[in-house]
Amino acid sequence: MMKRIGKHTLPTVLLTLFTYETCAQPFGVPDSTSSSTDFWTRHNLSSVATAGLVGGMFLYGWGVWWKNDYRSFRFYSDPEGFFNAHLAIDKVGHMYTGYYIFHATNDILRWGDHDSDSAFWWATGISAFHGFLVEVGDGFSDYGFDYKDMLSNWAGVSLSVLQQKIPVLKSFEMKWSLYYPLNRHAFIINDLYDYHIYWLSVRVNSLLPQHIEPLWPDWLQVAIGYGSADNVTRREFIIGFDYNLEMIPIEGTDINLIKKLFNMFHAPAPGVKFSPGRKPEFQLLLLN
Image 1 (cartoon, rainbow, N blue to C red):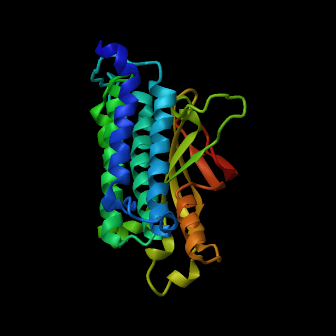
Image 2: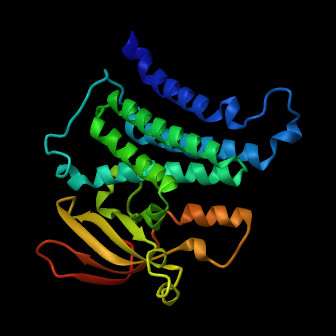
């Protein structure tokens, strides 16, 4: 009986838990006594936008990974080990996901005039809770609950938390670039590992001595990337430039939020790929 109803109820239960977590009254959604015109405030819109962003990511996971694949809950641990299974591209991806959700949530809530402490704790709770729910969903599918995936999610959240508490860590940013092949019809991220690059981008000017800093452009960063090739059988390491999109000389509360959100993606820039047994490959506009 449980198996027959679970296929349909599991995503509903998980999404209900997530929706409650993100839209609870303390988060800023008005109570029933508020007038309809009071709803359209930046404060409330930021709450709804956060729920929509992360809820949408959760629904994407259900649609491409769990739909029509319900089975009894199980644990899974890849026998190839942490660093060899998929060349650890998926683990870095999990880390980036936790990192992205924290920063996107925190930035959206701060845009909505939530106080910094409230935004920080909601961003921490939502990103950590999302990482846990995704693994629970995997546990009821063919993928299985992998505690290493969950810890990778939480590693991204932890880095984000530390960045808020240790200012020098803000000079190091995680970013992602993805080249999506036009001949692919289903956007399933874990079928596209060879098209991912995960980056650690360094705000060079914030680390330079004060008398040298003016010589380095504020918008130019250096990034180290990691990816795979040949159907996830060959590691690729990249070093190149990156752009700080927050330095675009257009200001405003709304545009600043947009700059922050897009700055978590790596734009095409000059870079060099290094791979075992191959000559270095330079690309003027390296994306993948």
